[in-house]
Image (cartoon, rainbow, N blue to C red):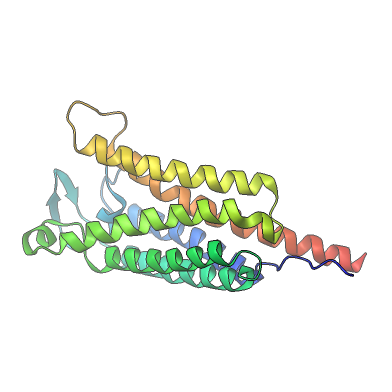
Length: 232
């Protein structure tokens, strides 16, 4: 009897994850370059998406390319969700429950990051109450994105993922969740200041971006190896 090989995650997911990661870093860098005196350490990422000029929570806000960042937020959510859904569909026969969780979380990330792109972290949002949707969206997006990395890493042995990838995925997700907790602790206390808020926030978000880039690169490398093997 022939051995049944595990299903391969489609190359489309790899491309989408790579596009999501590169798109995020590019959109953020372009928007930040037009924001006077923007600091990656002290400013929040969402400051880049605020269309108003003024101040919020003691930070100067002036993002001429806010539309670029908001498009980046929503575009990232779309790409992340599509990649997750396609990957979950391909892997459901060997690890149905785990990859169903990945699919649900990928969609949750899309919903959360879309709220971030539509409702801004600004004084105007604080005044009209829309800030609640912004904060909720950011929390959902960060938590779901990092948990996707953890679940995918923990369950991807069934689809032939190398051990180094599985370990790295879980570590990235845990670091992201811990960073979010530290952001809440640091920002909510005057007695504890380990790093500026922008550092903790980026640590909680960049773990998702790093996982996307890692996943895309590993998947594409696997495709190239298989094709090389066929040719040989």
